[in-house]
Image (cartoon, rainbow, N blue to C red; front, side, top):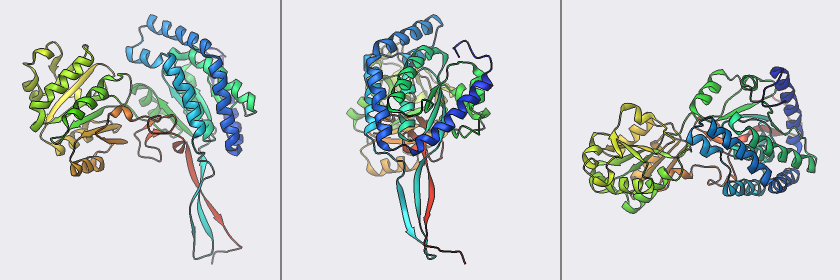
Length: 433
């Protein structure tokens, strides 16, 4: 197999699927010590191979720049010392987490005499399709291993060299501790046909996790026969309430928008109550522009009336269109809207948002509780940056993705999101009457 495609993608994918299913049964029986040993073995191999992995990543970055890869994708693709250290720390964090597999809950006695409850078990085989972000290869592998799942990883062609270098380390780590080398399989082809095979292999794959651009996820959602855990985009909002602390409003807004642009938890729309907009919006806008002089603000009529004469913002302002309220920019662009209050804010978010992450800045307890109850998003925050919507920040060690579906997994998907529950029953010869 090679990046230049396979001679028979169907046969290759069938073989990968069979191997993953067999490995999943072995992993389901593995104990916590074995799984943690595998994670730490991968950690040690990865640490020794740092220079090789960064060299492979440089090849991908050079190719991406030559191919005019979008800035947001280049940002996601890049590995540096800090991100590499984060990958290593993520392995240690996942190893330190409690093992969910085998946990028994809700044990009750029934009038018939049976004793029943629920046991947490792996999903089985996870298929993941993703773009850029070679660190996702490692995060997904670590979460799958710890939760007892085999995983098939299909990264994008732009990260092929990086992913293969990381895959080599994962394989070596698995071999060191005697776990099946098919527990984690990074596809050795970038053929698009491989994706079509993976999302329809119902005999071998139990769930698909797509992670990438909206076009990719729409295609997977449309064509998959295997259940999908997904989010289409991250059109995240921050609402500045009339009872907001001004300092917090400024600080959180700047971080939520300018910390990073190529992430799904970046603020794309700023909403502000009209009763404080006149005094507070110029301060927020100036602080955001000061953080990044490339920033462009797309303004509704009311925010234009407040900001258009501000000399500090000259060259950074334009009128918003209807499309702006529904857009995930992944760029230094921010939509701004002045609203009549929390009712209009909740309505706007539930209408135009992507149900990913939305924030209220307020010191009013009653309104904060209304916001978290009524905003229909996977993560809803009070007085904190939307950038915290992340598996690592949520204490999950890492995340395999973020789900905006209303299924068992919603928001950042960690170990528990890669498990299911089965009923278990203890009896003493009871028979049904």
